[in-house]
Image (cartoon, rainbow, N blue to C red; front, side):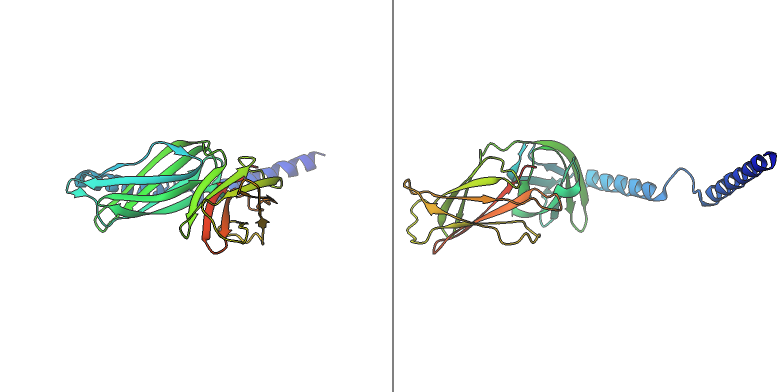
Length: 254
């Protein structure tokens, strides 16, 4: 028994010594050089921003669904022209709903894009501004409020105004959903239909056929499947034969 206990202690001491030796040989200290370099680069960028007199203003209120994001950028020389501007939106709950948007210059120093946030709640935004002489970053958090659209989406395709109503709102995956389409002035003989899809993901054909009611609106029922990846953002493409198509973005609840 004494020999067994002694052997166990010897093995434990050998393992402990080997662990300490390996840790000592591989330890580079408490400071990660990559963090140091990143911090130095960030300080250098902030100093360059200050020298250029860079300023940025952008919206401080957001809602789930479509948002028109507009950033106004300037330096001490005036509106910032010809910049490459990107907005990243990251949800606190996880990366599956993260997305990136390229902003286009619509006026001197004004950059804008339609930004779709699939779910309400807290989001982290990162704005990257790049020119040959300036690299600026802004990062902030904001709460996207629940959509006030009440499930009524408005759009147009080929000059035809399209109103799409979805019930319940927000729609729930794997449950029956009612779709109602209004087409003011539509003179086509064929009934419109709705195709449900997800950008960048093959979800199979999912078409909702609509029939005309006595009030002139078109109605149909369909089911939105649950995406295996956990994504919530969907597209509904309303096709009015002979008049055009309108694409609507919405989010599905779990």
